[in-house]
Image 1: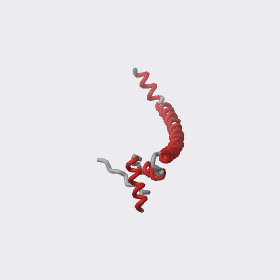
Image 2: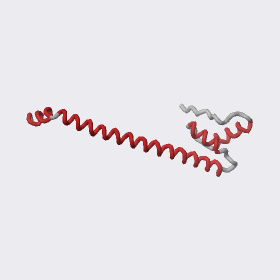
Image 3: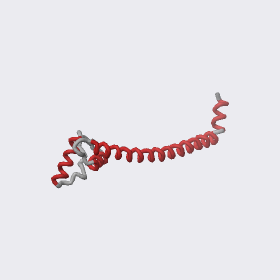
Image 4: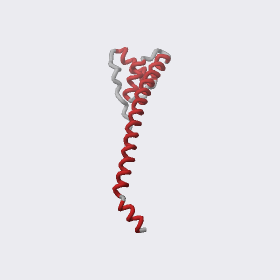
Length: 105
């Protein structure tokens, strides 16, 4: 048992260097992976906005796609009731372009 401890303590610098190298490689891989995922997230957001715009145009009654996209960007759910309420506000001259996020407790 003491020979194992002597070996470990005698080569502590080598183990430390190897651990540091492995951690550096892992950090570089994680940074590259993070960048790839950011690009994929941006593409997914663009596709989601495009899908929301297409769905709004296909909805009965002519839903304004820009209102739907603003709702999605603000974090609110783009239900038909909320969209229609904002469209009615727009018709009355109020500003529906900045929907207030709902507070749920």
